[in-house]
Length: 314
Image (cartoon, rainbow, N blue to C red):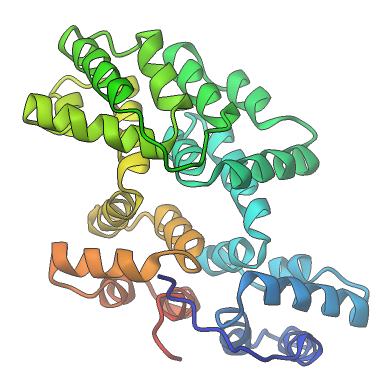
């Protein structure tokens, strides 16, 4: 369930005029920007962008980039983008870091539907004149490269059918690979990157039933390397994305110095999807409301924007 509170009826032209007024003259009316954009869904934001360009012959996104700054600017920029464009930008930023942020690539490839992932790959090509897999392969090496490229290029079956024999067989393959510490076995990558999510749920459940421990817990040990950690993130994203995102938020807030990138990414990408469920999980785990934790660790317009996306009325 989403946390976004958007009106059923709105006027793109009126919103465009109000945003133009907010950006006009000395200083920006950030409160007006927040009150409009944080209460509009993706389709409405797109209509506002079209209306703004029609009225003022100017790109609203570029105007906001020039008017806003810091974490607030980054959050608004990522929010106002079309969702497929947003994921393309997030993937590009993750790839171009000195050390590729494989968690973000795994999130995108393992939590989106096959059609959504395909749309992101198209958006990436259009925006950067390279394919996502091409850039990913150029900035990674070894087993991580094999895994991530396999994940972003897959087109999983999206139906609900389950083959119990396959679940049993592949649970055994995964167990043997983990037992033998053969994490980079090609069969592990094949199973995780090609099977439908429904089939993988059956495999993970069979693994737990047969071996008395969940595959995600069995995978990580004290000496886990980056590849093991990446496999762990893949399984968590496929198995229970809401639990995964709750943990990302918890770690972003509790670390020494808030991880604003992770905080922004999860709130902006999940606000129109399942952020209400993630909020409830967060409260169960931490006995603190997520919006209160976010408000405590952030400030100013950035805080106001995130808290509004979390469903708090401004």
